[in-house]
Image (cartoon, rainbow, N blue to C red):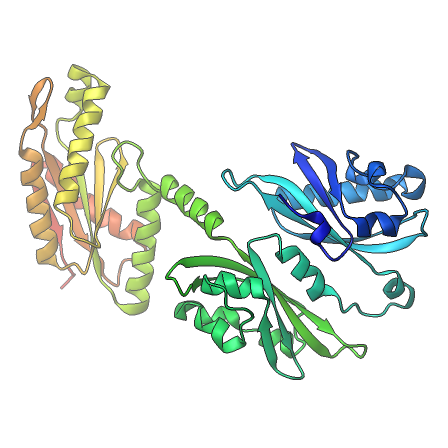
Amino acid sequence: MIAIESIGAPAFLVDVSGNGFVCSAVNGLLTEALGLAPADLVGASPAALVPASLLPAADAAAMLDQYRLCAAERRSVEFEIHHGAPAGGRWWQITVSPVFDGEEGAVVALIGIAVDVTARKADEAQGREVDARIALAMDLLEGGFWHYDVARRRFRTSPQLGRLVTGVETGPLDGKAYAARVLEEDQAKLDIGPLVRGEADTLSAEYRIRTAVGDLRWVSCKRRLTRDDWGRPENVIGVVVDITEQKRREEALAAEAATDSLTGLLNRRGFEALGQHLCADARARGLGFGLVLMDLDRFKPVNDTHGHPMGDAVLCEVAARLRRHTRPGDAAARLGGDEFAILVTEATEDVLAGLSRRLVQAMARPIVTAAGGIEIGASVGAALWWDGDRDLAALTARADDLLFAVKRAGRGAWQVAGLPA
């Protein structure tokens, strides 16, 4: 339950249901500022937070668009709007942030924090309240904020961010303590030089942190520069949000998209993505690898005679045998039907020949099923990457030529292409 009254700024809570938005709570600071009673606001559409006579229809529609944007893109949205009210018309800068369901990850509510910027609007002065607004929002989200004073070169986090980064109650952290929690390979993403030099006004980054209790967390950091009245860099404010669960969902979806649903091996998409990565490493760092292509022999009669469920069982056993004969670091894939491939790291011609021989022998052994022993077999063509291969397609074409030659010669054998002389 979000304690809306504990927020030290005019604030409101909006329930989200489909495309509908209903104000479910307001704090006393907001009702006092608007000169309205809570009953005038709670239960109404956010666009009706004040009577229609005090908020033009076009402004009401624009406000609803901002709520939809916040809910759809699952991120904080900031906008300015003018409200007439019994207590007097004012300009408000409003930050709305999504509140997520803990189990489903769905946006179930929006929390809005309003800051009166009437004076700034009047004289076009730069605001100085951004970090305070962020701090209030971060009290209710999995994250926190940090502040960098450009003139004093002083970095401090909020207590909430210190707790997120360390995993324990530590209070605010200085820059050295904060950076120490960021993984070494992500350290470059901490650079705020373009902001400090005034070359950019906003920067974003995603990086990983290791907490004091050993947890690995992904965070998103949005950074903004504030300037003084002469336009000089004054402060950099960073908003950090824990996106670990979002990353896990993305990784799970990516793994699912790259995996053959029947066998659990890589599918063609996963094979091509990994293969292109190995090609890039081979070109950049000279890390050689090899490719083994394998087609099953006499597999079609299995489906024709025993049905597709039996054929699926045979394919799963083939995948299991492939796993038993691949080394850690190698990757087996089902490219489709009865076509399989293995990407072999740190390969030599002898390594490919040994693997090809073992695969042909393994696939020649009968597969025990409920219908009795089923005999299939396999033909294999393999090739080493070399500098003449432009890409994965070129390497695959060479291995496929050898596979075709094996099948034309009678199947149940293998051929390997080493490096050209």
